Every structure is written in structure tokens, then in C-alpha cells.
Length: 121
Image (cartoon, rainbow, N blue to C red; front, side, top):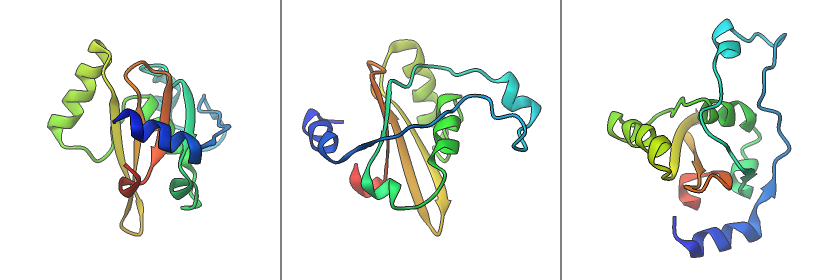
């Protein structure tokens, strides 16, 4: 992600206030409780396009945070695993219904994580 993109997005992002911790009592499975976050998210934000979908973005953020990379090819999933060790950017992609997808990107320095639409990338 280029620096220009980050600056542009920062003008249009809205801070998300979400709890992505354990949510027992909401149909969570045992695996949900056993899993642990794999990396720091930093400041979590979403673009207006992602917010306009009107969906629960926290559930996708949780999947990203816990290492479920979503609808990526095996090569990209492996790149994320290497990024965890080498300190590179982490990207996830999820289908959200209606043929739509969202990206979740955590910056290499782990200072922030952004949810956005592919066309906003």
C-alpha cells in the first residue's frame, strides 16, 4: 500500500469501536475460545464503503486477527504466515454476500488495520 493511499484513506476513515474478544453466549464454539490473536491490530478503521455494507464487520476482523485469511489462494495465505514472522503487511479477503468482498489489511508495523472494499484499495 503506497503512502499516498494511507494519507488519502485517513481523511475518509471512521474509527471502529469493536470488541473482538471472547463473546461467549453468542453461539461461540469451543475453538473460538481456544484460539488466540496472532498479531496486534493497532488502530482499527474502516472506509465509508465498507461501513455502508451494513454488516457486522467485527466478525471479519476477528477472523483476520486470529489468522483465518478468508478467500485467499494458498500462496497468499503462505505469504501472510511469512509476514507474521518477518513483519510484513497482512491481507485477508472475505466474501460478505451479494457477490461483495472486503479486504482487511494490517500494516507491516502493526500500527493499524483497515477494512475496505477491493475498489477502494
